[in-house]
Image 1 (cartoon, rainbow, N blue to C red):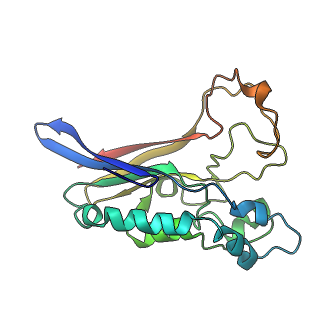
Image 2: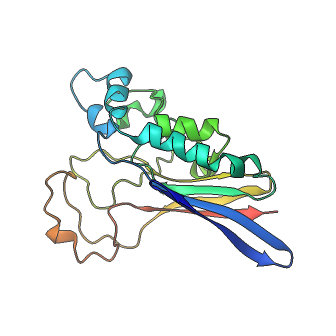
Length: 209
C-alpha cells in the first residue's frame, strides 16, 4: 500500500505460530528545516515553529496517520511500525536540558513527532535512551558536520501491546570524510565513503510476544 511519501506492507515474520506486522516507511518534505531557524539571532520557539510550519511536513504526517488509523486501532493484534526520514526533530529531544545543543532554545513542539506520539505510537530510541541530554541520538548528519546543526530526524516508532524494545542505537559503518553545511557543500570528498548515506541509521531490536 502507498500514499504520497508513505509506503507500507503487511509482513509475515513466522508461520508457526503465525506472526504478522505492518511496516510503514515515510520520507517527509525537506524544505524549511526548523533547526536552521533556531540559529538565527533572536530566535524563539515561536519563530522556529513559524518556519517549520511553512513546510508540508505537518499535513503530510496527519494524512499518513489517518491512512494508518485502521491498522493503529488493531495494533494489539497486528503490531505497527513506522520508520523513515522525518526531516524534523522530535519534541522529546528539544527540552530545557538540551537547549545548548539547539540554539539555546528549549521546548519546541515539533508537529510530526507530537502527532505520532498523540496517535499512540512509541519512539523506540527514546524508550531505550529516555534522557536526551545523556544520549542525543543524532542521525543528521553522518557527513555534514562543521556549521551544520546536528539533530535526530530519523525514527523507528511502534505500536502494539505485544511489542517491547530490547535495544536501540544509532549506527554507521566507518565514515572516512565529512564536509561542511548541507547547502553548498562540495561532496566530492565523501563520494568514496564506506557509509553510503548522509544520515546515520537507527537500529532497534524488538521483542514480539
